[in-house]
Length: 272
Ligand SMILES: NC(=O)c1ccc[n+]([C@@H]2O[C@H](COP(=O)([O-])OP(=O)(O)OC[C@H]3O[C@@H](n4cnc5c(N)ncnc54)[C@H](OP(=O)(O)O)[C@@H]3O)[C@@H](O)[C@H]2O)c1
Image (cartoon, rainbow, N blue to C red; front, side):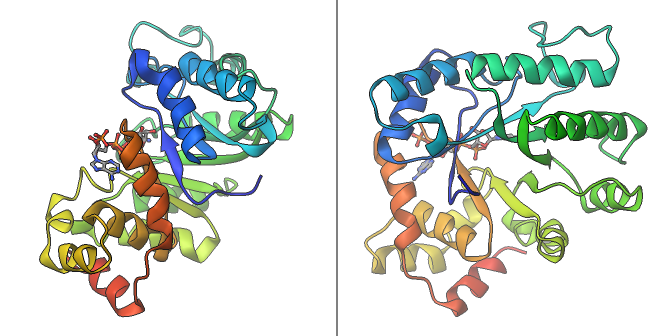
């Protein structure tokens, strides 16, 4: 499948991960975001949820977009998906092999570097990991590649080092930064798809803003739906990690909300 409209995020669900992954698919999500980072995600549980959905005949693997991540040692707890003594390229290969096993597939759709090694720059370690990820892609174990938690500086340095640009950037999206305006502009210029997370939790000022609540009331919708619809309208691929069946339905239904160009522009500059 091609790039989806909405991503269902599986962080922080622990034992509920299999059931919530299955429920998300039953509700209509066709794209799943996870990570081989046991500290925040239960990737094997995502695999159990997928298996249940396959068994129930709701979808096949070909109907789904599966995305997972490589996480550096510093972002992990003791439950590592690789040998910490191995070099970074080997860690990438081991982590992805373990992800493919968890998700019971021989190819994922997107493999994402969870975050650069340093908050300040695109480092030699990142270059090494990215080269290893490209090797995995060329070997057919992922279709596309992405980076997450990056600043404009990371991206500029990455591109300046002549590294192949990512297909995806996944960032926490703050309304007070013009909804990550600079990174989104960088992505738009290069055909990179911007994936936004924490669209609701990072932005209470937008969620409760009278401009947003008025549109919600007019459309008999919720402010959360207006925010997700706005995110699509400016070209983002939004993530939702809701644990509620009702919110899952509302999030998918938000894609049909009518928003005028003026309203989209106004929400874009609501907080920054
Ligand atoms: N790359 C990274 O470093 C990174 C970091 C964080 C997250 N992520 C990804 O992004 C996904 C989403 O995480 P998030 O930070 O955006 O937070 P989230 O897990 O989606 O949390 C959203 C919160 O808003 C509430 N909510 C209320 N109304 C809602 C509605 N209509 N739809 C959805 N939620 C509603 C949810 O409560 P209910 O559950 O009751 O709906 C929940 O408490 C994660 O699961 C993960 O896959 C990636």
